[in-house]
Image (cartoon, rainbow, N blue to C red):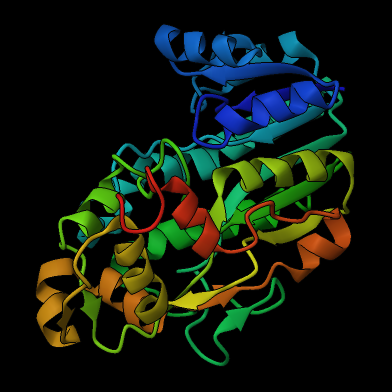
Length: 319
């Protein structure tokens, strides 16, 4: 099949393009500039420069490609700093999840696309009540921090319109927290280096639960969704949701950093912001049972434990 990847040069694209080519598919990948188009070409895809927020640019790129499947991987994140102003950091990504999704769906419909796969996110959007691990049928947070309301609304928009798309199978993949080469959570990445420098503390009871996924496994989920699965939303996470009190000290150990300090929530709130404090103390993880069952997807990095250790230059304690 011919696959059009909107945002092919991102963290998932570096794994997705080779996986698709190895599976016998033809790939056209969009980029936002000539330099990023060169990176897409180096992966083996046919590059096309496209502005995801310009309807005519999207229409021209998709109709020219005439794909069987469209994959929406467009985001605009260069840094995870400044999370006190979450919606400001995610402003363009929120637009790509709303306006960009609309442009891609319209172009895909006109091109006769059979399957449409879009990315979403799981973790902080989950409701902070009930058990520590949520499924796709559990509600999202009814009262998000004010600074993240637009971000949650954008996620809800994608998850509403894509599965309901007429004339095609619309699948939304809710990725867990990314780690892997080229990400913030990898050697040289922003979060990895902050843990190494002893700058990320345990906040309060550090009871917030996170679900992670290696970017290679996120790409594998896209490949699975191209080949099977009904319209709907799927959590793409590893097999071990874990509290911050568990995974952050283990990451520090793997890196070879000092154990994280602990600070009370009241002290962290004015420094880190309410969004970060809530995520670190009240967050809920996610189950991958539906993706395993209906997409036939299995993570090659079953848990973050061996995944983090694999990233360390010479094994645990040597980072």
